[in-house]
Image (tube, rainbow, N blue to C red):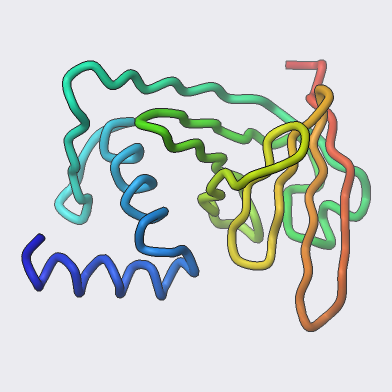
Length: 144
């Protein structure tokens, strides 16, 4: 990798709060997931790598809005490929990219001070910051 690309990767890692090795996977999946613009980085997977995408609509309890997800139904997108698993969750009007980490059960994703834990057909959003710990229970929106 060229030095300028390494510097860009570390800058993006600092801005997103993700480790550089996780960020590479995120960028790869995003580049393969849709239209590429002049600000996108394209990384190619080996020919036989499959990418899957799934969108699920959720609605959280009252604590969800305090943490930053929309008060009504919202969509979480799951992207898997090349050994990487991501969840894109709307937090405070922005799409945060959560990276999958080891969990005893279900699928646990992290971004900044947030944890999105999908298990048993629902999900729980956790936030731990200087303001304190919060959690919200979220259920798939059956009205979809």
